[in-house]
Image (tube, rainbow, N blue to C red; front, side, top):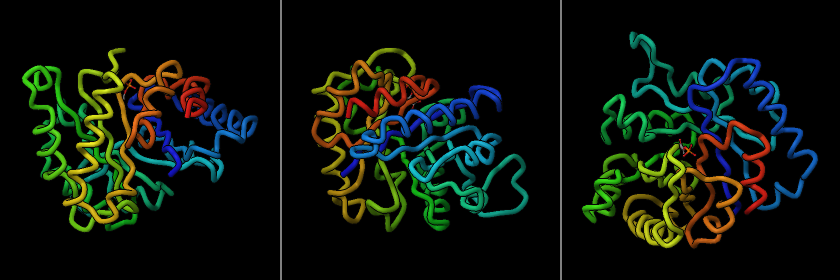
Length: 248
Ligand code: PEP
C-alpha cells in the first residue's frame, strides 16, 4: 500500500500563505512525479481555507478537514457538518487529535459520534490516538491506546473508511520523536487490536505522527505497519512536506 502523507496545517497562516503553500506543494510534485509512486497526499487546512486551497490542488492531492460536528445539521452554533465538508470536496477528516482531546476535552464517545457522521457522508475519518508522557512512564501506553481505539472507532469501519494515526502526545510539536522500536511495537499492537474493531484490518492504514521531519522520516517509514505520517509543523513548508514524502 502507498504511504499517506498527510499535512495538518492547524490554525496557521493567512489565506495568502495557505494558497502559496498549496501552489508550492502542487509544483513540487509536478517537478518530481516519482513522489506519487509510493505516496498519496493529503492537506488539511483550516475550515476557512478549504475552498480556496481546493482550487489550487490537482487530483494528486486530497483535501481534508481538521474536525467536524458530531451532529448532522441544525442549531449547533459554530459547528461544521460532515455533509458540508463533503460538499466542499473533502475526502478526509481528522478526528480526535490530541489537541482537541486536551483543549476541548473531547471524549472517545464524542469522537465516535463525529466519525459516524463522517462515514455516513463518505468521508474517511483519520482517528488519532496516543498516550501522554506520564502514561508512557507508567507503562500503560497500550491500555490507553486500546481504550481510545475501542471508544472512538465507529461501527462498520474498514480500511476504506478509516485511518488510524498514532501520535504520542509528548512527541507532537516538541521535536521529541518516539524511537523506531517504540513506533514498531505500538503499530503492531494497533494492527492486532484492529482485527476486532474493523473490517479489512490488515489493509487499514496506520500513520505515525509526532515531530516527523525529512531527516527522520526514512527510518520511521521503514518500520513495519507504518503506512504514512500525519505531519504538523513540517507540513507548513512545501519543501519539508515533500522531503518527508521523498523519504518513503
Ligand atoms: C500533529 O499535529 O498531528 C503533529 C504530528 O504535529 P508535529 O508534526 O508538529 O509534531
